[in-house]
Length: 200
Image (tube, rainbow, N blue to C red; front, side, top):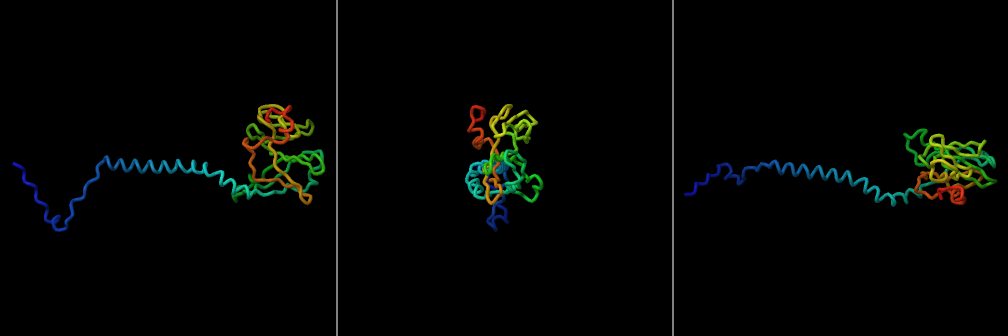
């Protein structure tokens, strides 16, 4: 004989509402796990999307790269290599002195120059110019470069990076905002003299 069904409570019959169901522990953990995974996937996707869309952004930035003055052409006597400094065009207010970027300017003739990044192509250490020997040398790991920027010896894989330059109204301008990296083509000094340079 079947058991009699319990009679519904008087209050529930009047309102037509059933008692609220309790969430099981399994469902709660499932919802929590899905939420945590969604947050982790979003955080993981942000740098990937930034990497994918970086080329489009880079094209927009390249239009902003301006010509920055290094000073008067007379500051760089023919046949000499001098240190110059320019202000990074993509400066932030908190950058301070770190936005002042040095470079080496070699004046070959009246209006023919070479402007080298100060960074060694091995690990980016600053190179120094030694006029007595006519060489750029890296004090950190022994990299040596000829006066024209080509690699002479040591661990650097190629010659010094060169900036594009122009002379306008007696002033030397370089295309600043370019960060020297191994992704750029080798310096012209290096490409012109492959017999002296292993980096071409």
